[in-house]
Image (cartoon, rainbow, N blue to C red):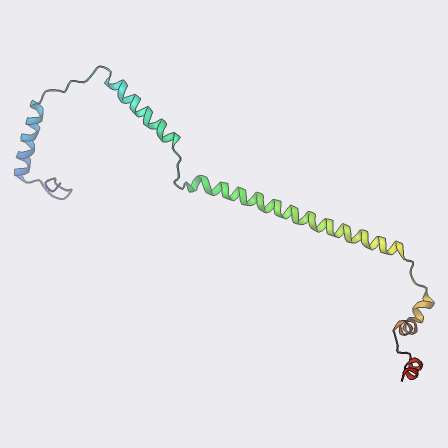
Length: 138
């Protein structure tokens, strides 16, 4: 609308005359006939449009509602993960303690004399080639 004055411009006298004639012409027009239930029909149309909007999915991002839900979900997942990790560590430690207890109870500790001669016993248990047998085979 080029002819409308902006905030800084003063309307031209020709524009004022044109607007005055337009206002007079509109004042001479007769009022349109409106049905008696016009208001009721308009309100029903508004209600129908509102119900259609409420049934439609709102796919727009509402960060004010989404962000707290994501934060709470992440906190719950983190807490559950830490609880599961703690439970797993506890069960592994319990199994380790039970295995050590079983081993300690199953075999008696070696005597002090056996420990003194441990190196000699260890050397005896290592396989060696039988030199006499090898000499006979050659």
